[in-house]
Length: 318
Image (cartoon, rainbow, N blue to C red; front, top):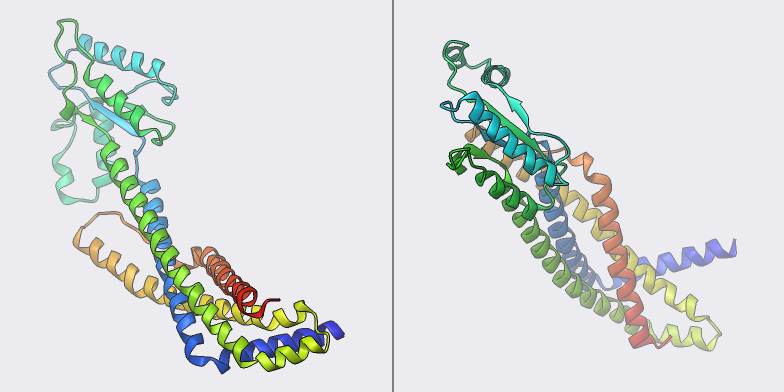
């Protein structure tokens, strides 16, 4: 019972300090909310980029198109060259797979069979070319993938001519590289902005708690003369910082929901309506809500409690 009475006292004092320094408290919450919203927005954008990137079909596949003028012997020379490359590279788990004109037509019909113009393509009128497909375990080692593309360009026929022109090699190397560059930039910008705002938040919260300490300085001195422990004196101010962090997390979570639902989702939908068939999707906010909630709560409690401890150490000397 004594513990609960003590906690009730500390929490009530924490709330009183928040309302006692209303202007500084609001400033602390606004800056901390800005920090969380910026971080959350970058997290949501990067998460959706990852999801759309992972949903891209044939992302880890290099397609080597065989010219229609090639004979069976020349096609076999291309296959042998690709097989040699596959045998030498550890990130290629299997052999090159041959895809005939007929198989390409079947894939085409599966993708675009509902389009009116797709009826013009049939067995008699098949402009598609046979090809070989090389599948990677992953594209994380982008430098090695680029080397493989260069090796494919270096395959020659028995007469010494280049077997495959660069225009006949279809890969997602540039797409992967560009996406990774965008992600890296977003990570860097987001972390720097979060760090700057977090530092500003700490200073504002420190000053807010400092005002509370100054306003209760006589009460604090009286408690110390009466034998109050350092822990007992610290708790209300630590709770004040924690409450500021929790309020900031709740507000930031709500603002992030509104921004995501009505701004980001609306922007993507309007873009996909202009770019027909882009295939860009946006995951529901609820799928990110647990991570965002925990992240905001951690940032808020960290900033509030750390700021409270710094204020106490510097100004209260306990």
